[in-house]
Length: 524
Image 1 (cartoon, rainbow, N blue to C red):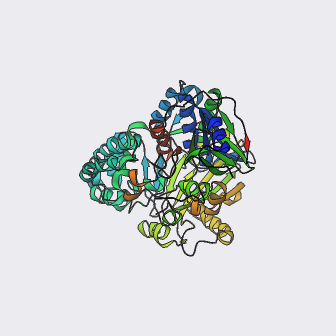
Image 2: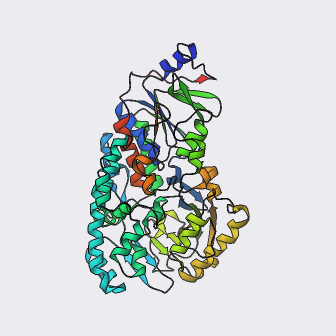
Image 3: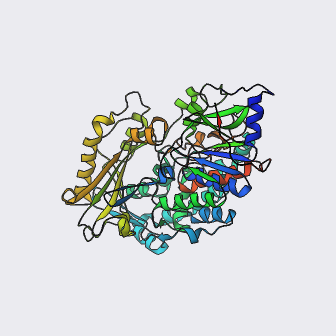
C-alpha cells in the first residue's frame, strides 16, 4: 500500500504525478459526459471501464447480424446533449443523427384498448377523449401541472448542485406548494377518472427505477418533456452517442481505456489521489470521478475506509430501484409482419398496483407481467439482417436484495418462455416460428456486468427522501477530491438525468492546478 503519512515519499510522488489529471471510473453516459466536461476545463483525462465498449447500460451487443441496444432507447431532452457538445466547442448534430418518433409509443391493455402517445396536442386530446371523454379537462390540467414541475424540478433543481443542506431547505416551500409529498400515481388519480389514463400518465417513473405509487409527484414532469421536446431515436442507437462522446474525449487529448478495471480509489493526505487498477498499477490524479454506482463506489472502491454517511449498512437499507429482466431477440422474414407494432409498445398486465407492489415491496416474481417492447428496426432497418427485425422485451422484476431473492439460474428460461407467450398472445402472433438470435439479461447480469448493487436497473430509487440533497452527493461527503456521476447521484437516472449529473459536477470541480506531464504509471 502507499504510505499515506504526511511528507512521505509515496505521498509526494503521487501528488506530483497527479497534478492536472483526472481519472474517471466508468464509461457510462455519466462518466463520458464528465470526462468531456473535464477535458474542456483543461484536465488531462483518463477514462477507464471494465467493459469492451463505451456506454455502460447505453452500449450495444451484436448477435447473428442483429444490433441490440442494451439499455436506454430514446432521447427526450436533446438540448442537454447539444449543450454538452457546445460546452466542449463541438456540434452535436454533426456527430449524431436524431430521428423524431411519431407516435412516441403505444400503450395496450388486456381488454384490447390502446392509447397512442405523440407530440401533437390535438391528437393527444382526441386519444384521451376516445378512452374517457370526461377526462379531457383533467388532461389539460395535468399538462399544466407537469410544466410547472419541469420548470422547477428539471431546469432549476436538476441542473444545479444539491450537496449542501441549505440547498434543500430553501426549496422546501416550493416542494410543498407543488405537493411533492404526493406520489405520481396519486397526482394522476387526482386529474383522471379512467384507470387506464391514470396508468398512462403515471408509469414513467419505472423508466428511472421508481415505484409510481411511492415516488414524488415531481416526476410527472416527464409528460411535459415529451410534449415540449419530442421523443427521438439516435441512428445507431444510444451506443452511437456513447461512441461519439468517446471520440470527443480523444479529440481533447484524453485517453479512453476499455477492459480496464478499477480496484480501489487511492488516497493520500486524506483525499482522493488516483485509482489503483485490478492489475496493481496506479493512475495518479488530482481528482477522481466515479461513474460506478454509489454502492460500488462506497462499499468496494473505498472498502476499509471509515465512512460517516454512506456506510455499508446504510447502503444496504436504502430503497433501491427494481431489477430488470430483458429478452433480446431477433427474427427473420418478419419485416412486413405485425404492421401495427411500432418502435415502442407498452403491454400492460392484468394488475397495475398489485404487480408494482410485488416488484418493489414483496420481492415476489409474479406470474403476470407488464412489458416494454422495443422494435428499432421499424426506424433503423440496419439493426437487423435484411427482412428481419430486432427486438427487446423488458419486464420489471424484484432486485436481489430481498430476503429470498429470485433464483435466476433456475427461473430465467421459464420466465423467458412466459414473456414469449405474452408476446405471441398479445402482440407478435407466430413469433416462435421466426426467432433467430436470443439473449437474456437478468438482475444477476446487471450485478456482474455493471457491478450494480443487488442487480438493480437504476441504482437508488428516487423517492422524495432519496432525491436531491438526500441522494449520494455529486461531491463526495466521504473523501475530498472524489466526485460522483451517474444514476445514483443528483439529479438521478434516465438519459437526461445522468447527463445532468455531469453538468452539476462541472459546477463543483475546481480548475486543474497545473498542466499535467505525460501520464506515468506507478506500481504498488
